[in-house]
Length: 146
Image 1 (cartoon, one colour):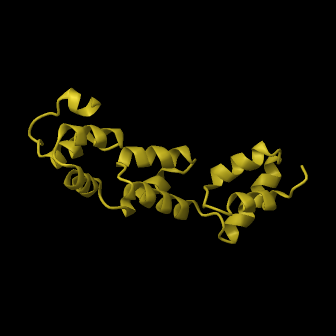
Image 2 (spheres, helix red, strand yellow):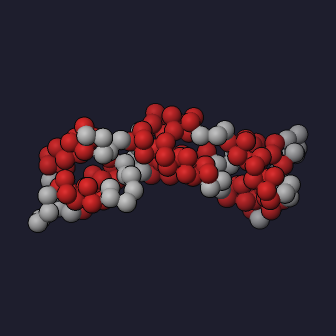
Image 3 (cartoon, helix red, strand yellow):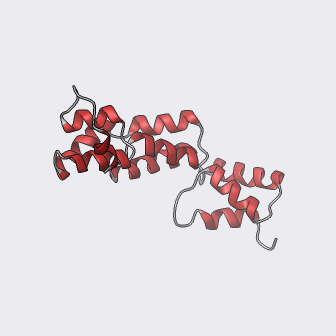
């Protein structure tokens, strides 16, 4: 390994924030041993370059802004190696899922295709039904698969 672990991690952070787990995996792929990875990540956290809560909040906000539902956001954050409490705090900080679904329905119209779009984006079935104004009736399966 020719590059120092801190330099490798700093380069990975140059263009976007990353979780501690993502950086750890990157350093591991580069052949950095566990103790050295741990020390490098501790240093980066101490100086504020790595902050899982900040990463989670920014990522959740970005996905919510792109009309993703809570399930999709949760999956993305968990895939980044974030702890459950960090994921839940990030989700609590974004606009509530029903409001995001209503905004999508306002833009795309109250149609079955909009319901299918919301389902693909990870919205809860009950939230979709409420947003489409069919809360009292179950959504037809074809609504969720179109």
